[in-house]
Amino acid sequence: MSGTLYLCATPIGNLEDMTFRAVRVLKEVDLIAAEDTRNSIKLLNHFEIKTPMTSYHEHNKIEKAKVLVDMLLEGKEIALITDAGTPVISDPGEELVRQAYEAGITVTSLPGCCACVTALTLSGLPTRRFSFEAFLPQEKKEQARILEEMKEETRTMIVYEAPHRLLKTLKLLLETLGNRRLTICRELTKKHETVFLTTIAEALLHYGEEEPRGECVLVIEGKSFQEIEKQSQAMWMEMEITEHVAYYMEQGLEKKEAMKKAAADRGMTKREVYQALIQK
Image (tube, one colour):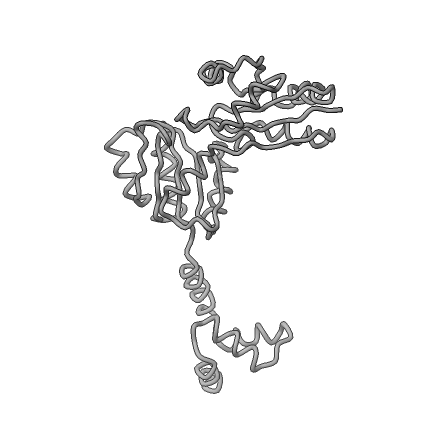
């Protein structure tokens, strides 16, 4: 019988956020796969966890996943941990999970800390719908594509960024998205945690004068539906009303229905559209 792969969330800064269940599982499994064993040994020592560790990271994720899956198939119990937070989220663990499922292995997740969700709850921005972008790609073409997608995104967006790249990223966001509301969370759960409710432009000015420190989570306001509606109306207003109504009639709508839809697109009443048509 094969073993189970446990995805164990670990603290993102404050060791008191470690769960009782995670400590127990890390003590009971046969092996812990860690993104950085040098970093994780501090956590294990703190909780007196003596379980053997092996490294599993971005540069060995495919081949090492095969080794770990073989061990799981032999009946070993393995826990996966990342440097901080929940493994698999913007993390090489997704490859191990994929291979484990393909091999028919049971995978379970031990919930706990996650920087993106922690920042979202602190942001003061809408939380019902959100998108997680992790770190923006550094390759120019892919970066431009992602930024263009973000430009039209109506959900709250979450981006990770290192302090030495923060200014550059803020400039890119301002150029692409315009001046949106923004919350920057730093040093989450740590002694010097800061939550900065601002705008992209204000943040750019602030960090132009004060050197950014610590890993940052940027929570960015999505595009408003009012803005989308305004842009859509502007597009339709470039078209003659006769063309607008004809556009819908060509799609099979009756004239009255086509006029109704054209009126809605242009922010007009159906009567106003009718009056404009008879004057043509």
